Structures are given as structure tokens and as C-alpha cells.
Image (cartoon, rainbow, N blue to C red; front, side, top):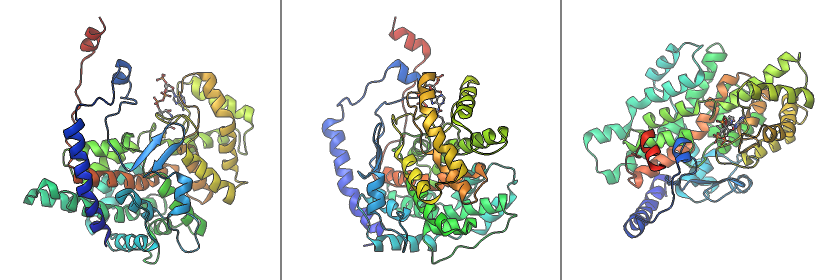
Length: 432
Ligand SMILES: CC(C)(COP(=O)(O)OP(=O)(O)OC[C@H]1O[C@@H](n2cnc3c(N)ncnc32)[C@H](O)[C@@H]1OP(=O)(O)O)[C@@H](O)C(=O)NCCC(=O)NCCS
């Protein structure tokens, strides 16, 4: 059975479950909202539904019920590789079952076939100035592809709302197929004299991305596979996924929705933190004239940052209250492949000193590192030193989760989002 057919078989039972839930228990209360939450980023209010992943504050993320170590063990690998293939994670998120090696191979082949960038897109990407941030180029490239949205075309022609998932499926497959090509095109154009590398049809999605970026060390292909799995999905309330969900709820297509989500990922409190971490570390190293700083030196720089009213990038989280398992997975990779690397040593020292400093500072609810505290040092080790590009890597991965959620939203006919806003006067009135 093709993946599309398999997905289709999952839709009706889920529609029935959701319909029954609304009919039989629609008025059951699941969350209350305090004034602090209304004024504080709607933190913790249960008002989104997401079946692809679940984030526990202490344990971290589970993808369709599986922890990261479980996934690393159970998802199919490339020949001779140890890391899980992101195609397998996509399959799992979409249909809720672990894929076979053959299922994964079929996705790799299908994405290869859909991966060619149209000429008009290449011209648009070429027209962007090289000093435009890679995230702006990435978002713009995704948005430009909207011209070819099958969802929008079908909508204009007239399509039953029950069939909307079908053209959305086609759009998300086309988009996921093209994202590594768009990202690597931006990378080579911006940093490698506009010299591009054509896709290799023998390679899987992650390995091909690594190849097109021009990193020759075969270990980088393995890192890329792991990276693309780790950053993919984090429930639906994070800024990028929620933005895409919101835009998609107006029946905007996958291109509009993902481009908007990528714009959210470009914020320094969200995905851009990976770039900020490296910038922070490089700044410290530069000020000290190179080498690995001592714990005392790092402590001083951390306090300087906090006393300057800035955040420590890569630390803290809106939901997590322990070390992010995505951080741990990257740390394990580093311990195996680059234990003596200088920047890895700085990252490790930061892990030793930062939590205590954040606790003393007394503000952050979570003093522990998140995914972004670790990813950059692995990139630098393999030669991807241009840290402004890091959030694009994150974006390619996050698209797996965002787009899977999006096609499920259309399959289940989720409503247009419209929370109620209230004024400050109204709030004051409530507590008189
Ligand atoms: C991720 C983040 C945005 C979560 O925000 P949040 O849910 O509001 O976090 P908290 O509830 O812990 O914030 C409480 C206070 O601690 C501060 N705080 C949180 N993390 C901090 C950090 N890493 N460094 C310094 N201060 C921090 C907040 O800015 C806030 O200060 P305020 O009361 O003056 O507004 C926040 O931890 C942060 O800015 N981290 C650094 C950026 C980062 O790594 N982002 C990637 C996340 S995956």
C-alpha cells in the first residue's frame, strides 16, 4: 500500500473519534485560564490538539509515543549507518506506525522524484542579496513556490472540504522533497561563491542534503540524519508549529503556512537561538584571544550577559523543566565523534556552570539546556561555520512536524482559529 493510501485509511476512524468527542463531551472543561496566562503567552493553557508528539516537562519529547533513544533504536537506518532516517520519522508521525525499511525507501525515492527546483524559483533565490539573512531567503523561497500549490488550485476549482487532505498531501510531499535543495542552494549561493552541487539520486534525504551543502566528511551525513529527526516536532504549541497551524486554519495552503512558521522560527527566543549560542561562544573566545575559557571566565561572561538584561541562549524552555533529551542525543554524538573538540569543550563547561548561575539569577523557570545549546558546535566541527545558516537547518527538520500536523488538520477539518481577546479594562473589572 502506498503511504498516501495508508494515510487515507487512518482518516475516517480519526474523524469518527473526533466527531464523537465533540458530540458526546463537547462541553467538558479541560483547562482554565488565569490572568497571568492571558498576559503571559497563553503558557500551559490546554487548547490545541496534536497527536504527532507530546512534550513532558521532565521527560521531554515523545514522537507518537516513542522517546528519542527508542526511535534511534527502532527507526530504519541507512546502510552502514547508526542514525535513524528522517523519512522514517515522517512515516511514523503521519500514520502513527513504525515503518519498514521498504516504507522508508519508497519515501526517499518519492522525495527524490519531487525534488527538482523550478527555474522561476532559482531565479528568485538568485535575486536575493547575499547579505539577506538565510532565514529570510528560506522563507521567501518557500513562499515563492506557492505558485505551484495543488491545494490552492483545487480549492479555486471547487473541492469538497472532506477531500482537502488529498491536495494538501501532495503539497506537503512536494515541499518536503524540495526543502533540502532550497536550503543547500541558499547555503552555496550565500557562502560558497554561488557554486552549486546537484543532488545524488543514490542518497537518502538527509545524506543528500549534507552532500548538496558540500560537506565531504561521511560522518556529517549521519549527523544530518540525526539532526533532521531531533528538530522535527515539538507538539503544536511552539511558535513555528502554532503559526503554521493558525495560518493553515484559514485554508491557506502549505506554502503560506510553512513560510509563516519559518518566520516564527527565525526569532531568537525560538529557532534562532542555535545561531545565538555559537555567536555567544565565539564572542567569548574572541575576547579571551582563543582557547577554551575556564569555568571562572565563563561564569563572568554569563553574569555579564544576564546583567546586561539579555538571555543566555540555548538555556531555558517554555515547557521543559529538565535537560532537553535532544541536547543529550547531540551530546552523545559529540562524545563519540568529537570528544576533544574545543567548542564542544566550551559547550560542556557551559553545561556545568550555567544551570547554577540561572538558579542564582532566580528568573528562568528552567535552568537547563535546550536543543539549541548543542547543535552549533557539531556544525562547526564539520566545517559549517556560518552560524547565520543554522536556523535554516532547523527549519528543514521542523517542516516534517509542521507539515504532518497540517495535513492532519485538513483531514480532520479543524476549524479556523479565533480565540477571544479581552481588554485590560475588562481584566481589571473581573478582579474588582
Ligand atoms: C525559551 C524561553 C523563551 C522560554 O521563555 P519563558 O517560558 O517565558 O521562560 P520563563 O518562564 O522561564 O521566563 C521567566 C523569566 O526568566 C527569564 N529567562 C528564561 N530563560 C532565560 C535564559 N536562558 N537566560 C536569561 N533569562 C531567562 C525570562 O526572560 C523571564 O524573564 P522576565 O520575567 O524578566 O520576563 C526562554 O527560556 C529563553 O529566552 N531562553 C533563551 C533562548 C532560547 O534558548 N530559546 C530556544 C528555546 S528552545
